[in-house]
Length: 105
Image 1: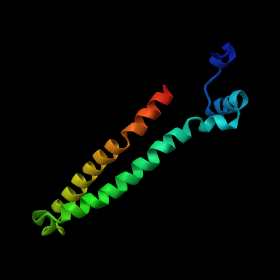
Image 2: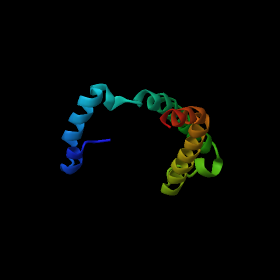
Image 3: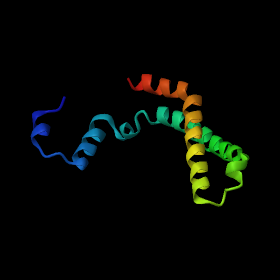
Protein backbone atom coordinates (compact mmCIF):
# COMPACT_ATOMS: atom_id res chain seq x y z
CA UNK A 1 0.00 0.00 0.00
CA UNK A 2 2.73 2.44 0.93
CA UNK A 3 6.13 2.91 -0.57
CA UNK A 4 9.12 1.45 1.24
CA UNK A 5 10.33 4.95 2.10
CA UNK A 6 7.12 5.62 3.99
CA UNK A 7 7.54 2.40 5.94
CA UNK A 8 11.12 3.22 6.96
CA UNK A 9 10.47 6.76 8.15
CA UNK A 10 9.27 7.53 11.64
CA UNK A 11 5.49 7.92 11.88
CA UNK A 12 4.33 11.50 12.34
CA UNK A 13 0.78 12.78 12.29
CA UNK A 14 1.72 15.81 10.21
CA UNK A 15 3.41 13.67 7.56
CA UNK A 16 0.39 11.38 7.41
CA UNK A 17 -2.01 14.34 7.18
CA UNK A 18 0.05 15.75 4.33
CA UNK A 19 0.01 12.35 2.61
CA UNK A 20 -3.79 12.14 2.92
CA UNK A 21 -4.19 15.62 1.44
CA UNK A 22 -1.82 14.80 -1.42
CA UNK A 23 -3.44 11.46 -2.24
CA UNK A 24 -7.15 12.13 -1.67
CA UNK A 25 -7.49 15.93 -1.19
CA UNK A 26 -8.59 17.78 1.93
CA UNK A 27 -12.17 16.46 1.87
CA UNK A 28 -10.88 12.97 2.70
CA UNK A 29 -10.71 13.92 6.39
CA UNK A 30 -14.54 14.03 6.45
CA UNK A 31 -15.15 10.90 4.39
CA UNK A 32 -18.09 9.01 5.89
CA UNK A 33 -18.98 11.78 8.30
CA UNK A 34 -22.46 12.46 6.86
CA UNK A 35 -23.50 8.86 7.43
CA UNK A 36 -22.41 9.10 11.05
CA UNK A 37 -24.19 12.42 11.55
CA UNK A 38 -27.37 11.03 10.00
CA UNK A 39 -27.33 8.43 12.78
CA UNK A 40 -26.11 10.50 15.72
CA UNK A 41 -28.52 13.42 15.29
CA UNK A 42 -31.74 11.38 15.64
CA UNK A 43 -30.14 9.18 18.32
CA UNK A 44 -29.23 12.17 20.45
CA UNK A 45 -32.61 13.84 19.93
CA UNK A 46 -34.49 10.70 20.97
CA UNK A 47 -32.11 10.18 23.90
CA UNK A 48 -32.58 13.68 25.33
CA UNK A 49 -36.34 13.66 24.86
CA UNK A 50 -36.74 10.16 26.31
CA UNK A 51 -34.58 11.07 29.31
CA UNK A 52 -36.79 14.06 30.05
CA UNK A 53 -39.94 11.94 29.76
CA UNK A 54 -38.57 9.06 31.85
CA UNK A 55 -37.39 11.47 34.53
CA UNK A 56 -40.87 12.98 34.71
CA UNK A 57 -42.39 9.46 34.83
CA UNK A 58 -40.03 8.31 37.57
CA UNK A 59 -40.73 11.42 39.65
CA UNK A 60 -44.44 10.57 39.54
CA UNK A 61 -43.73 7.30 41.40
CA UNK A 62 -44.54 8.08 45.06
CA UNK A 63 -41.53 6.32 46.62
CA UNK A 64 -39.08 8.22 44.38
CA UNK A 65 -41.00 11.50 44.13
CA UNK A 66 -41.32 11.91 47.92
CA UNK A 67 -37.58 11.39 48.43
CA UNK A 68 -36.45 13.55 45.50
CA UNK A 69 -34.11 15.64 47.68
CA UNK A 70 -32.00 12.71 48.86
CA UNK A 71 -28.83 11.68 47.07
CA UNK A 72 -29.89 8.05 46.71
CA UNK A 73 -33.22 8.88 45.08
CA UNK A 74 -31.59 11.41 42.76
CA UNK A 75 -28.91 8.90 41.74
CA UNK A 76 -31.58 6.28 41.10
CA UNK A 77 -33.60 8.76 39.08
CA UNK A 78 -30.64 9.73 36.88
CA UNK A 79 -29.28 6.19 36.54
CA UNK A 80 -32.57 4.51 35.66
CA UNK A 81 -33.75 7.41 33.51
CA UNK A 82 -30.47 7.49 31.59
CA UNK A 83 -30.45 3.74 31.07
CA UNK A 84 -34.02 3.64 29.86
CA UNK A 85 -33.48 6.61 27.55
CA UNK A 86 -30.38 4.96 26.08
CA UNK A 87 -32.32 1.76 25.43
CA UNK A 88 -35.14 3.74 23.83
CA UNK A 89 -32.78 5.74 21.60
CA UNK A 90 -30.83 2.67 20.52
CA UNK A 91 -34.04 0.80 19.71
CA UNK A 92 -35.57 3.71 17.81
CA UNK A 93 -32.48 4.39 15.70
CA UNK A 94 -31.33 0.81 15.15
CA UNK A 95 -32.27 0.82 11.43
CA UNK A 96 -30.07 3.89 10.90
CA UNK A 97 -27.21 2.21 12.76
CA UNK A 98 -27.60 -0.89 10.60
CA UNK A 99 -27.42 1.21 7.42
CA UNK A 100 -24.36 3.07 8.74
CA UNK A 101 -22.60 -0.20 9.53
CA UNK A 102 -23.37 -1.70 6.13
CA UNK A 103 -22.15 1.41 4.33
CA UNK A 104 -18.91 1.30 6.32
CA UNK A 105 -18.35 -2.35 5.41
